[in-house]
Image (tube, rainbow, N blue to C red; front, side, top):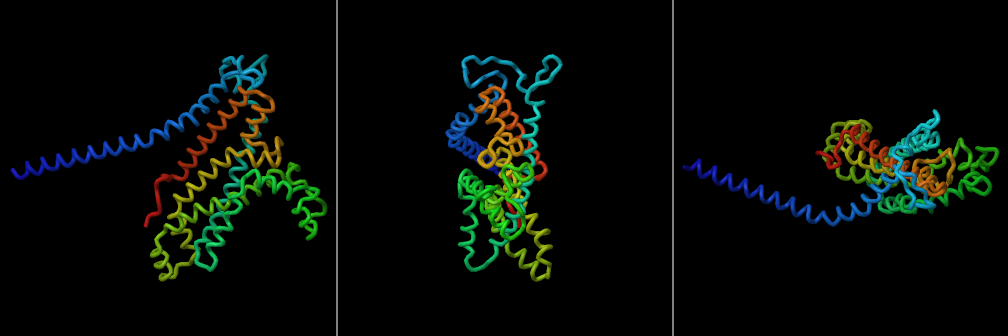
Length: 321
């Protein structure tokens, strides 16, 4: 009899808990629905429209005469010759430029951001002021910082050339953003200067969540600080580090404003976004440009998936004590 009553009570408790969970899930979807609807209208519809236009011959001069042409914007053969985005050398050059820019800039920003975060995580006088000062480059709008650096890198009146000439490192002014050998490196340098504080901020947030007793134990045991960093700190902040890298990689893969302001439509630095903009606006080929934008979206999605799988980390994870 007692067992029956216990089972009945457990069943009622389980049913009550299940109903409570269902109510919470229903309430969550209810509160999220306005945001999801807004997101679908603001982001979903333009994305679907862009994908659709990529299968048409739409032209900016007359969008009313749009014809469905299937995959011709991507690949088509005519009289034995292949045409389309997938065989366009300018497009693949833009893809290579974008991936190279992403790998180098995000890599440098991760290294410098880690160093800055470790410094800011230490106790010293004026730490609050230093933290605020470090964020200044990130707070400046990209177009403003790009224009500022464009003046500084100018071959005739740029302050960078003036400094290097004065100390004797160069014998003549260098056109940093016009020379094919230096243009991409100039863009990477400006991006690293501007975005490293963002990486440092996210990594610092992860560092400040780490339990202090681990470091106290390592200090008592006499473990070298470098070994503590690689064996303790780095594994514990891996989730925060991966989030920072993913966010920056996503931003770098769709880079447009910095490259366009510094080097315009130069083939040496043209990114996928700059290429798509050139087709859409300069050449008024809405269909072809939309196909380029669609491929850009797919490449970003694939790269994000690969990064998540390589990192083997869930974004909801946090440092574990």
